[in-house]
Image (cartoon, helix red, strand yellow):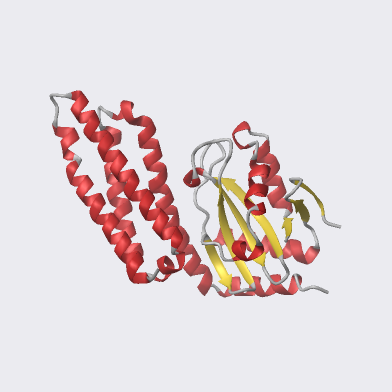
Length: 140
Length: 146
């Protein structure tokens, strides 16, 4: 499975990592993805939009390992899954609670994230995330 | 699971919440004994949290049924309204300083329930959105292997 991130996603990750409460965010995201394959991620229940077997816009709830708040207070990660290409594109992440916590996203927010991912794919402006080493680098 | 099953689960949760809400008077009226009142309140909050947790678990198991159900949003809105009402009573109570942590946990779970409801609406709206259909098509074109 290839995991790609948009510039926006990397910015959010770096911003969160500077805060002690969210310092393990990249680790948490990689652990979450490492436990699942593309089909699971495509059909995962936190689903916003789906074309069966082709495209899905998903919202994953990823537990914050530095707190014990469980799912309700976890990170929300918005991404696009393209199972045929075996690709997943992470577009945005935010914590639900804490100093950088934010409210629910609206329809237009999700559309903007989906557009951001589409533009990043078209321009080749993506980062590759290596979930084993928990590192990322600009896609060549 | 089916739409009927998920409707039944939500209906049950709502009835349980209503029963708990009726009992809520106990901890407000036992004014003579602070400990009794605190025990009643803690019992109420534990009960309410269990109802909410069970319901979110059931919904997560069958998001598709939850999306399709016409009754689910109506019942859920009633349940959230009832729960928020209860939270307001607790917030104004003299016992509140003693249950701040449990209060925060319960509030968070109710807020999660509300988020599921919100996401359901967003999901249905996105499904009908023509612009979103174009975005999907453009994404598939851009990601096509050369």
